[in-house]
Image 1 (cartoon, one colour):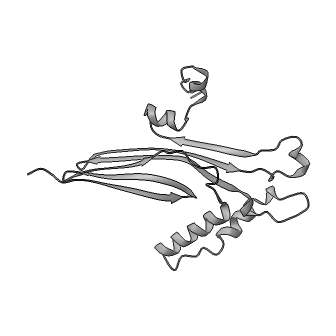
Image 2: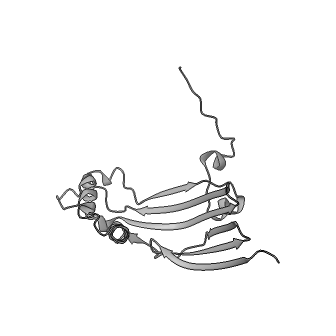
Image 3: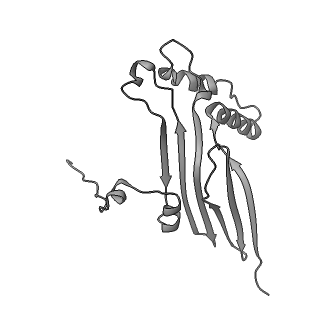
Length: 180
């Protein structure tokens, strides 16, 4: 008799982004999870206020007695430097987050052989947040953040993940340690 194998596909959304994942069961002690990078539509975004509300719901779901009352206020206070020249209060809903692509691979075979790889690409839309006094000098429309721990060429190419050295066609420089 052979070991059980099974495959489960899941479509879900995270930060307003539609994602596709698969869970595969291989035998008695092995499994794999794959979050597949896929192209996204232009309107897949959430504002920071929505993210905070979702986090509050998750925290309350895990621990109904947890205090989340100051979460939004604390973030607004820390972001007060981004308020407009006219003295308007900073609005968290003016920061938009877009999860452009995500990749996650977890493979477990036996008790000790586990592989975890990931890659995420986020865009934070900041257009109009810079105070008018300096906006003529510098105005940041968005900030792109990419984080990854994989070397799989297909994933790196699909998600357009490159380092500056990759872009310039150079070998990455080894960090130099000076002084002792």
